[in-house]
Length: 341
Ligand SMILES: Nc1nc2c(ncn2[C@@H]2O[C@H](COP(=O)(O)OP(=O)(O)OP(=O)(O)O)[C@@H](O)[C@H]2O)c(=O)[nH]1
Ligand SMILES: [Mg+2]
Image (tube, rainbow, N blue to C red; front, side, top):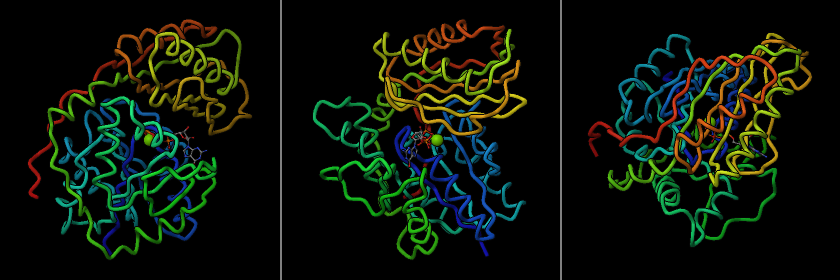
């Protein structure tokens, strides 16, 4: 049997990773083997750490979206075949457009292609479909919807009202699992056309929209003066960044932090300024002196601002911080291969 490749797109913070890890656990409990391919414009990804810490086999495509890194994507997916997965989930970076074309290019290869699912956080949809929304983000968001085979709304546990003008095939929650089995049944038994809405993309406009976002991928080791739990490190660190970005007028698309200590790990993230963080991992992990921090920030701001705020938040940590990786940039123009239409 060919493994099923399930590509799940959607805007930054839509709930892709959360859904894929929940779906993966569900399939594992049915005796199926799964893997996840993560993706970003840079390297050092919270999502990859989070997947691995959640006992999911993960491969990572860094330095550009799946379309622009198509041959690396194929290689990574083919390498995962060595582990005999039944289902490979692939999560493109949340600013990616052009996935339907890529999906079509994959048809007839070594994978059974599931429909292109695009996830939508209803609250973000209300914001980005409204008049007066940031035009760049709205452009990315609307076009992601336009190329989907299946649009699904996420975070159903937050019980938000339906979004006017947004038709969805499934309402689901990666957090509670609601609707996930029905979505899986749909994508794994799909008989319809896959990649049926290829976009005719204006790459100049697309590049401009992506470049509106500042991107920061940052990593450091922290040697504290007094032992603290991973949650005790991540909480104030994330709060400091949030406060700094708010002060700088930088609208957050997604800020996520992963903290690994010898005693356990914690991942926390916010998708809006001032939002209460969502936390995963071991909140009761014992205090430790050493912590490895990975921070990924995507916000409407100059990359230098993001870097400064990360440095400021790091300087407030009570110990010695050694930065081991720092990329602050605006995504460069996408350069996908010519997919046959
Ligand atoms: N309440 C609730 N929160 C959710 C759900 N799914 C995701 N979240 C939260 O939404 C935020 C974003 O979730 P992710 O799964 O990281 O979203 P993503 O689409 O992978 O984000 P990027 O990879 O940055 O584009 C996190 O704080 C999650 O905890 C859900 O079903 N319910
Ligand atoms: Mg993700």
